[in-house]
Length: 224
Image 1 (cartoon, helix red, strand yellow):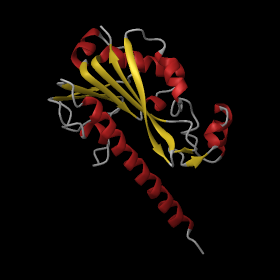
Image 2: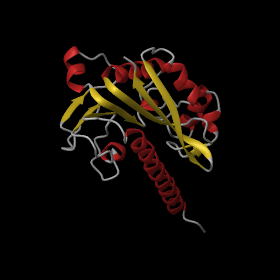
Image 3: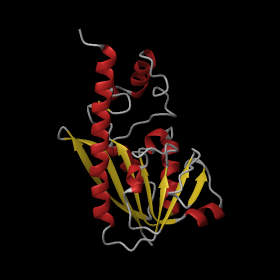
Image 4: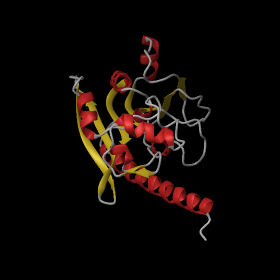
């Protein structure tokens, strides 16, 4: 007889290994886009307070910067960041905060799907663009992929959002069932959000799992 707990741990480890591999692919794409740029400082949006080796993996692997900054609603204690602001990216920022944290590159990984409603996601992008001097990068899981990597359950996230959230609540995943904690996006959703900004140009890149797009990488630039 298969031990259920052993299966669950093995399944979770398998998915976590996939996620780690995808992050390394994302890092490779980002490094390719940054290689010819003249960048001094980088701002990480949505930094996690977890100080484990795998946390904040993407920004920690972008080495060619003099100054690393962080804005997060969590309390960040890592000395990796020289400037840290504990604040949600969906809030209004003061002029002083914009001046202090504005950076050549602004990057956010696996955050926009956790800030809440479509309006909150729009506010996040608005603030990211205001905080950007040159380039901004937003990475998020693709809702179109058959596997939803937060719940690790396939297909049900393709259902209408109300039904998907009701199922998550019924099976004990009440945290993920709330819009303020998980609001997945497809490429078309990001494109619709970006239509609100005329001072940018952007491209969309992807990494794939099982030959299907699993992560969306929005790479944008400010237009003067």
